[in-house]
Image 1 (spheres, rainbow, N blue to C red):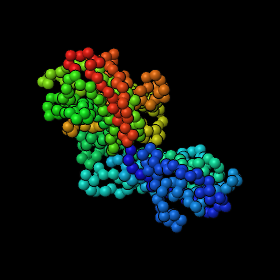
Image 2 (cartoon, helix red, strand yellow):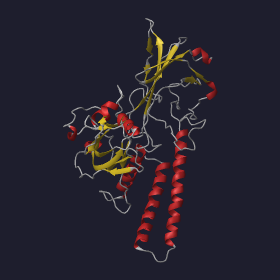
Image 3 (cartoon, helix red, strand yellow):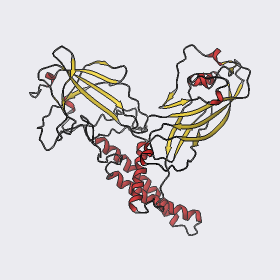
Image 4 (cartoon, one colour):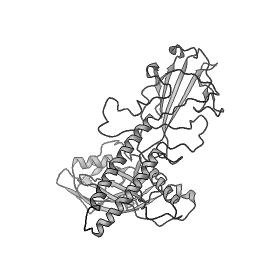
Length: 434
């Protein structure tokens, strides 16, 4: 996730306390990034006390703020949220912040200020936007060890969400026709999916020893258009090889907070052959996870439909309806129509819409497969912490045999990226093709 959130934390009034620096341990680690949102506390109002642009503990609470050993001492602080900037491109109308301040029992939810329409070129709409907030709130806090620890660790968690306006069916878009209204529905649905998905790039190199004894990647033939796997490795028979696997979360590919730590294992097997001109080629695409996600989605739609129909039936049976009842009945009927369209988009997503299962509409770079398989990360508490809770573990590629896979010994991992190098001896497969 990219983007930064501009916040300010100020002390209100004075307090007879020790200096915060007296409590601070040496070399306290900086914690300036939480879930990809940079907590930037720099503000002009702090310039009289500090010109630093350091982390939360250095900048927002400086030497003029002091603490006391008396646990009954209190301090009044003002918490300000100014703006969210450099967020991923989106058609959202608003941004929303949600946080719970130190030792507070209730969450605070703030909506950004509505900005005037910006009539610029279409390309400008894809640029990162700035959402302004007008939020100031004062808190009275008791000075405790927990408060001091929170100040040191910058441990105020702030969630930042996009918020989209619903599209009433009774209001047509600018073109005032059914096609424009349908396109608007597709964009709204696509934006909702962008908030809960992320793209991962998976790359594999096969290395062989060259004439000078160094491990070098083998040649990949990616010029043949009928090959859907991204290319063909040009291997030499009988040589020991290495597999280099890399994983990378693509920036600006969605809003789901996803962090990859390491590659735990590498397996290879299920040797199969295909002719170059065969009508059906093999690639890394599988739709088992897609079908599982679609089943969950359609099940939720059906439950929502049953609820809406029961509410509509209850309202229709009323004899003396108020204006609120009539308005609610109209809204429920509109939601039912929109839900029917959502079901249609779930089963037959438009090409290139970004809705799960939509046919691709892009020209992939060389060595990149056109079809991108989906992995369903089911965060339902019922399905988590079970033996089979690893996302994508049950997905099987075409002609893959789980019993014919070999786990390769890992040689080393990279410290600066998610990469693993595994030793591969092709003779373990006992296949004449190798």
